[in-house]
Image (tube, helix red, strand yellow):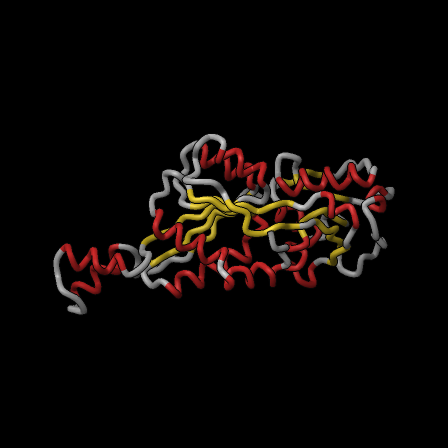
Length: 268
C-alpha cells in the first residue's frame, strides 16, 4: 500500500502582515505605511512554502522550526513527498516558494521548464543502505542476499530518486531483483519494514538513521555508485521570495550544515 506525500504544517497566530499590524497597534513604532515598510525591512515575514523530498523531512522540519524562532512573524509550511510528484505539482502550478529535490534529475524537471529563479544549488548528498527488520534475522549482508527465496523486499518506484539510485546500485552489483512492491517515496518503502510487512528495503541511510531502533541498516559497496545530489532552488513565481531566500540561506549555513550532518547527509 502506497503512502502519498503528506503535508506538515505548524500554525502561528502572529504571521506576515499580522506581525506588522500588532506592532503598529501596540504603539511600538510610528504608525502609517512607512512604519509597515520599516517593520518588513527588518527581516523576512509571512509564510514560506517549501516542497521537499521525503528524505529531507526530519532535517527540514528542524530547520523550519529554527527559522520561525529566528524570524518571529514567519511560518514555514512543508509539502514532503516523492521528488517526481512534487516536481509535477510545481509544473502544474502548485503555489510554492522553494523546491528541494532528492536528485539533480528531478530538479531538472522543474529547472528545465524555466520554473526556477536562477540555477539550483546542491546543498547535500545522500547514499543508500539496506534497511532490515531489527536484528537482521535473515542475515542480509549484501544486495545479492536480497534475492533469497521467500524474502520480501520493497523498492522505491524507478521514477523516484531513491528507486533510480537503487536500480543503479543493483545493476552495479549484477543483481536482478523483483520486489514485492514499488513505493512512491522513500518513507513509504521504509514504513513497510518498520511494520514488518517487508523484510528489507533499499532506502537512504538518512532515513534508516531517522527510524532509530525500528530498523537496522546494512551498508553495501555498490552504494558508492549511486550517490544522489540534493539540490535546492527558489521558484520563479514564489509568493514570498525574500523569506524563501532567507530559508535557503539557513539550509546552506553552518547551522543548516550541522543539522544535515547529524541526519547522515554527505557534504556536496
